Structure formats: C-alpha cells, structure tokens
Image (cartoon, rainbow, N blue to C red; front, side, top):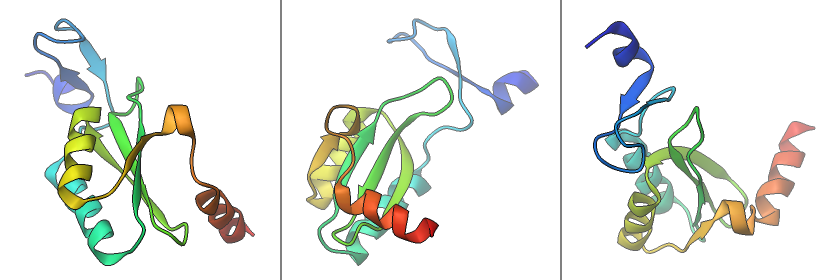
Length: 113
C-alpha cells in the first residue's frame, strides 16, 4: 500500500464507487460509534441527523439533545446510522431534507457570543 493510500484514500470494492479511490480525511471508526452511544446514554431527548457523504468526509451523524447540545461523528453509511439509531432507541432524520433543529442553532448562536 502506498503512502497515499494510507494517508488519504479509501478504496471501495464493488459498490457505488466501482473501485474508484475516494478522498477522505479519515474513515469512521468504532470509537465514533461509541461516542454517539455514550452521548445518547448521558442525555435525554436525543435525535440523530444524518449528513450525506462529501468528497472530504464520510457520512456523519449529528446527535442533538433536548437542550441543543450536539456532537458530530462519522458513521460510514446511512445504513449504519439507521441501525445505530434503532439500537439506542432514538429517531433519525435526514439533515439534507429536514435541516437541523432550532434548539441546536440557538445554542450555537448563544455560545458564539
């Protein structure tokens, strides 16, 4: 494996990319999923918002609690996000369609000031 493969590229097998190399900063890891599980366990009213894969980042989930606190972690695919949401018992939404909750935006504005 070349340095480029180790540092920047993720190679897909047979699938949506048909073996093309895709540039990512890093892939999702078990630690990312563990962080999301811990966030759900420690807070109430958590919802998942799935963000689509980009040229620079894997599919991500933004977990938002009832107070507007949030974390963003990579999950790999929307299917993994849905399975994780089912396993921890939280609703999951498509952020590209629905957007983010008002409480999250308000919390961000408050903390920027």
